[in-house]
Length: 205
Image 1 (cartoon, one colour):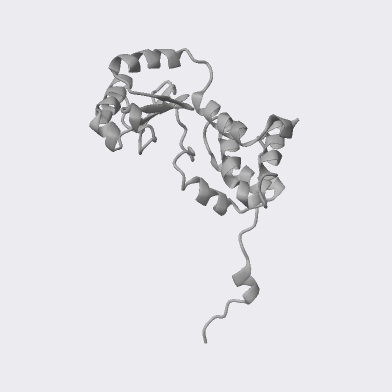
Image 2 (cartoon, rainbow, N blue to C red):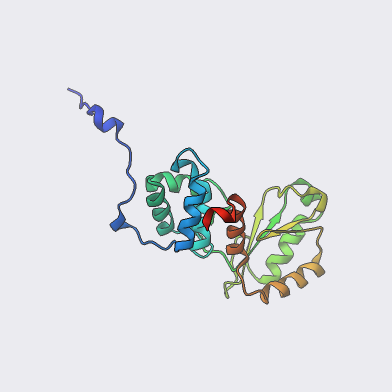
């Protein structure tokens, strides 16, 4: 006789984390922002993507396991659902601590034809790291990425919310010096800009 799974078990879905299982790191201001974001959507599930950007900012530029648990708790979704969304999109740094400044190097067709791979190699050699690596001081991470949608400026790189191109080795040297003297993390700033772009200041007052 085959085992029969009760209908109620078949309908059961993973539940959201309980309060005692969550380490809350969202600030009071972040919670106001999250509530403003949620108000834009028909339900909390629809706010997963902007909530993850908020988490990436609040957790210092990385989506840790604790960050995903917290998002799951606030949105009343399961951890598995939040993890599935976060790991699908490359712009979320899931369990991957990047440097203070993440340099995305486009090597898609236009940039490839305009020495994009040479830009990538120069950066990696200059910083003494492999593609995808982070410098020992935690200052820089270099990633090869797909099209940045700025083909008219090839070869182009992205740092935080800024695009630079066309670039050459001289420009790269100057940019690295500038970033070394930048106190703010461009990774965290980028996440903050994405969050702020989706809400009005009036909504969080």
